[in-house]
Image 1 (cartoon, rainbow, N blue to C red):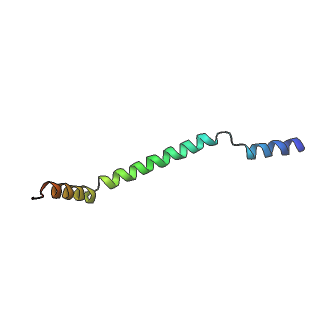
Image 2: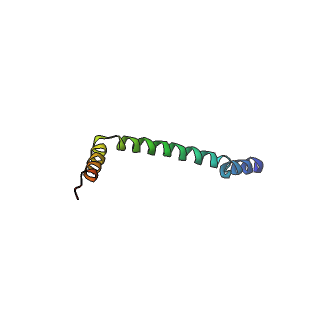
Image 3: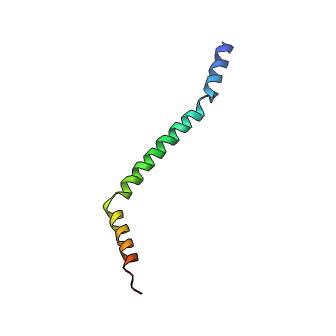
Length: 62
């Protein structure tokens, strides 16, 4: 019984594969952030704001 308990405890606290899971979670989070950023940047309000800023910068009179 002690051998089974020791193996079970070893399996519960083993962290083999943890870094792989962390990389996978970070990759999914980065992809989701990229998708949200793309959606925000390609939205009409951002495009209009950037167009106004560029027009204002180019149409300044000295």
